[in-house]
Amino acid sequence: DHPCDRELPWLAGMVHLESGPLSAEEIQEALKFKISYSPADLFIPNWAAALLIDQECDETLQAVEFANLQLLEFRHIDHRLDESLAAAQRTIGPLTRSPLPFWQFHSRPLRVLGELKVEANDLFERTGNVLKLVGDPYLARVYRLVAQRFHLETWQESIQRKLEVAEGVYQVVSDQASSYRTEFLEIIVVVLILIEIVLAFWHR
Image (tube, rainbow, N blue to C red; front, side, top):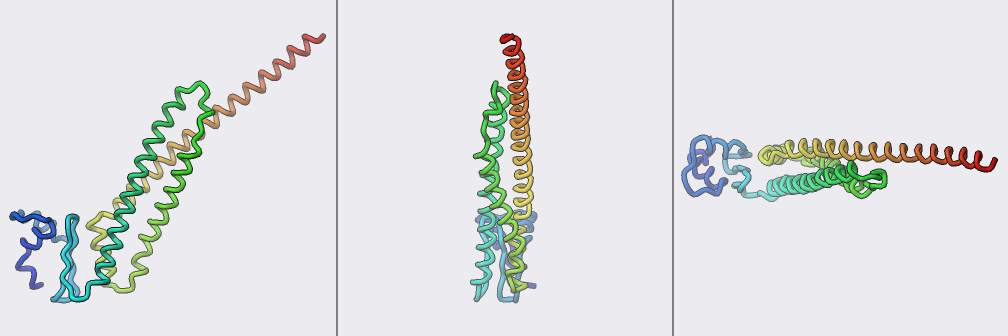
């Protein structure tokens, strides 16, 4: 057993930033993700705080910092995707009510969505390659532990779903606007033909 196992309730309170006693279930949840390389070190990540006991901890802290950075980037892109979806909903309303919906332009929101997709794919690629870049198996386990605690995989899946929804919405808007423009051009062609016929009869 690890020497710190005798202090599990205290450790759970520390990573939860709680001074009062915790239930057995909460203690188990708080310490669910923990790792040790030797009897002299211990790492316990949590949302509120993390505990690290180690004499040489620079590389471990770098792995934790990288996971924190990924979480911030995921949250930032997720927030911007929410804004993009809200903008898409605001676009659909005027499009359906406008007498000339084909004049509505959507290049800017589509460009923003494209930029978000590039950023998200770049982040997903870096996330997938991080374990290849980390040469030390123990540091890779540390990163995976923090990633599990931060639910990075869930964040990634949520962002991918929102990207698909936003792309679908803007595709519908673009297709509808294109259809309106085509119909409008067909009407113009018919009107021009009618004008030519009327003028031909007029000049007889």
